[in-house]
Image 1: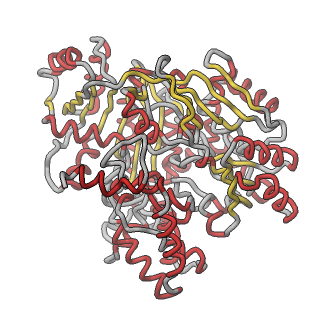
Image 2: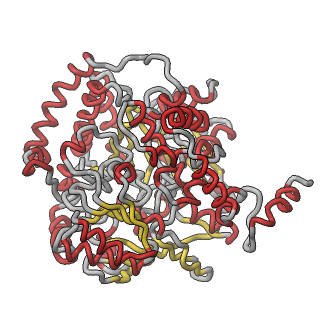
Image 3: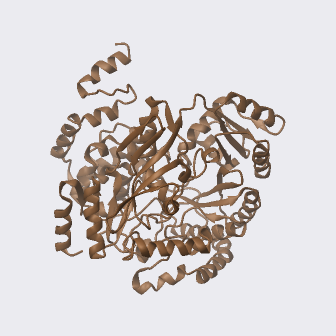
Length: 630
């Protein structure tokens, strides 16, 4: 980007936006949770600028500038998807909307809540706790943003009872590339166009969420069945009997085996299982009567444990890092036939697939297929990546559709959107974004570097041929390059770096990030820097210094999906960096001083002890002593 344009942006945004230009910091915005080794060969994934607007006025100035100069803009939330939906394709500007995270207005009478879309679902639930109100449905990636779930999907926990996210929202406020801000009600035709279209039409600024009274009880039950076929028969039986669970989830035996491995005890049976949650005693009673003689119920404490883990879908997988997932929405009656074919294919390819499924309607299931493979085994990793579109294509034959599109599922866009809807989407894109600045060259079609020579591989006819070749060759290569069972002895830092799945849960629970708003201090990003260090890449002293802005409080580990020993990893990383660059004593003192003067920090750190409307850091000692009876 021309330096004059950068200067113009700085002048336009003023103090109402933070501009990030550092090489490493911009690189942090070049990826999502997916690990696709060839992405940088296909696209210019590192943005020219990252801007964190703090107000609608600042955002509007930036969007108008980008539209005038035909600069691509890529809106970004907490990044909990792996399909490239937020990854830059042509450099451009990343708009990090995490500062636009205010809870705007609670209407207790109507039971609605207006929020800015940079707010996380976990923050909303915390806000609602004292109000006797709750969300209707929410994503299993509980630390993702409202805008992210609107853009990428909309099915999750509670969707069996309450349906898709679009039915849980009363209205949206959207900014278009023209700078126009428009409020769109749920009954309007264009309302649905912003769900699952991954930021193609406008930037969703606010959403009015429909709430409900807080549930008085949570009554989860885990029931073991003899097979996946029995499990889905059981689910269809519940639906036929008109039982009314809040949520239904299928877990295969491999999933429960991993839980046992982590816990170090054989607590769960090695069987396929169904997890259900009820909120009323009479519905639970009906379920227990129905379940009698159909399966084996787990003990209550095990059912409660598995229900709690619904918010950590990738947690504690153990073994190989880097989850490779295929997510499909599939007719409920087709789930088992599809899974049987998947098992045949993956066994031939020397892969072990874990299966989970959220039942998101009376006739629809969201299937999540996960395979763990280490990116340090590049041959095996690439072979297994090539199988993902094979499994997706297979799902289409059983009436399924991809859950998300992003970049990597673009060849399936016509399967995701029927012809009429796709035609409407394309016409709407031309109408509201005629210069194609919003998230360009993805979702509808892909354009790669080198005059789009490699982009032709994303055309459906050629892509189908490549899938066919992959289905033939992957079993052969899969056996030849099957990953080693064990690696050489690793330090805690090495193990942590290559086991991080970049889910972003840590960002929502990091007091250092709360105080500094620096992406470099987010735990997953410190591990990204550590990876560069371990692999011999150059890093700067400035980026090294930011690693030390950490209290070692352990709050990141509390929510770590993979239960990594992060505090020990920080000690190892800091020792390596101190040996190379020295310890930034002055920066650390400034950081500590900033924390100590931040009421947001004290409120955040001590929120487990008390919830108060009126709060200052001077009250901390008194309240904690009172809490402990001192």
